[in-house]
Image (cartoon, rainbow, N blue to C red; front, side, top):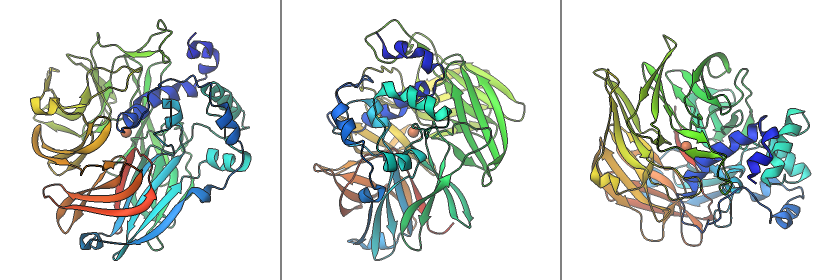
Length: 490
Ligand SMILES: [Fe+2]
């Protein structure tokens, strides 16, 4: 019997269900990015009781954190002033056996401060209510069957939100306040946590959780655009997408809420905001309770088309545009409105199978004409690559490339033309999303990498040059989702 059918009365409450859906989206992308031996996919953990008992003991969060100053080995690094941070779940990807275990790792920021003659490497755990509770009382079980119970007890006010993990992305509001810059650690099933990045005395700390009246959950891909914060929440039971805009982001008020009905289950990982519209993809995710072998009762129905939803905030109307094919988008590279056309550049996924990790993002252009006709343009050279996590630099887009489930390099595109392919040296793989950084007028890709022993490196490499800089950090690194670079001056 499918575990979700067994739990369905509780799941109608049903944050855990939403968590499972999100874990499909993001944990899946993460797993597909790392070449470790993750072979067993499923939520029915039954053999972890011994480990669970080991983890019942209280612990000191600080004992697993790092703050380390390292002399630089390349003068180019001395010209950088700022901070690179990668956030992700605190898990050893070589040992996890389920997506759920991977996804429910506590938010860990791995970051590098650039101070001139040296760098400071820091590992900081976001002090979520869940992690602080666990440090005092011991770990919660990660058995999926316990999650609905924990959620219920949280609703009764007896436990913290066990789904509050702050492990997905960092959001910079580009504003300076008495408590430092407004930087938030995000997780799709919780409110954001404000993070303090201290440039004076290099280090990272958690300021506090920011509860926002009227917004239960804050998307991992919330955006700061033109003085407004844009975010989404969704209800998988009623097929409703909630689109929020905060006009006073610093004080978390003046919230406007729009409700958008979707044709399918609204698993919205990312979205885009243009001058006219908010852009969402309504991909054909549907319930499927017939296959009791599969653990997740949601399938990507490749017999039905995707729809692009354009929400006009000024008119409060939604235009649904039928696409010729089904596809899914995890991350948008660029969305342009010109001459009445809408152009979306993004890695598209033609098929998704929740029982498989073999998925491949194809970087394409989706053009929507004023009449609503959708044309998808492909480049045959790009079709042979597995690309995602796009980063925009002027008119260029840099995408990370995966080969054999490891990040082995990057592809620089202009439109759908490949400008350059960049390969990492043998034995080096990126931990997660890089940032694009300007050093003396020249763009570089910056990120954290690991070797065969999981030892970590700061890597900086030219987007348009052969320049490659590697700085050993002397500590093991873990995998991450999204990153950001903060220049020390706003
Ligand atoms: Fe993402």
